[in-house]
Image (cartoon, rainbow, N blue to C red):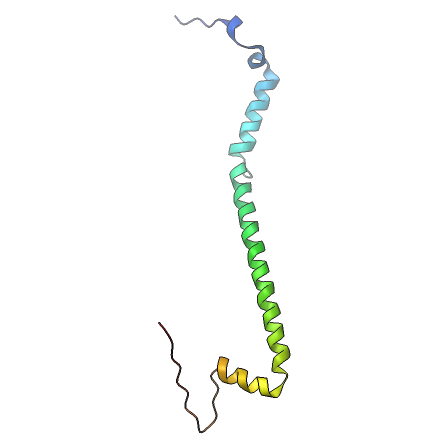
Length: 99
């Protein structure tokens, strides 16, 4: 038979409070709904969203500048022709793309 020598087990492993703490900590770290892996994934998602937010702020700023420029009639016609491909009645427009 296998006999377990109780004297060789360290004292902290005999302590029921220590064992309970280890079980509780293991549950929190690995098994809970908000475990470490979930928190890390959410932080990564947060950093991505912050980056997207900065990109959107830059696009918004660019759009606001273009809107200010469009208030001038000369720029409005140039913008409509270049960006939206508007034309006059006697014109033909050819759009060349690199696909």
